[in-house]
Length: 84
Image (tube, helix red, strand yellow):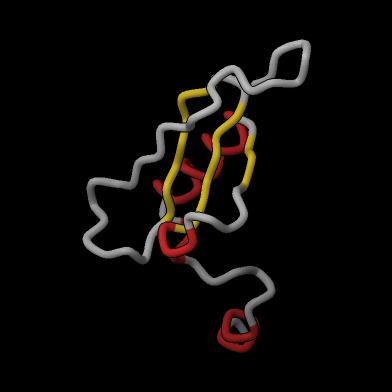
C-alpha cells in the first residue's frame, strides 16, 4: 500500500516462511499490508518479488490446500494419454 505521495505505508515487509519448511527450498511471504501480499524465493532474497492482491493469494493458498497442486494439469500429456 502506498500513500498519496507514492511512498509505501510499511516500508519494511515482515518476511516469514512456513513452519513446515525444513530447508531453504521455499518461498517467503510478507502479508502485513492489507493491500498486497509479497512473495519471494528464500534462496534469492535480493531477487524479484511478486506483488499479489490478498484475493489472489487466498485463491492460491486454497488451491494448494485443496490438493490441486498435486493433480496433473489439463494440458499434461500423461493425463491425455492415460484417459484414452
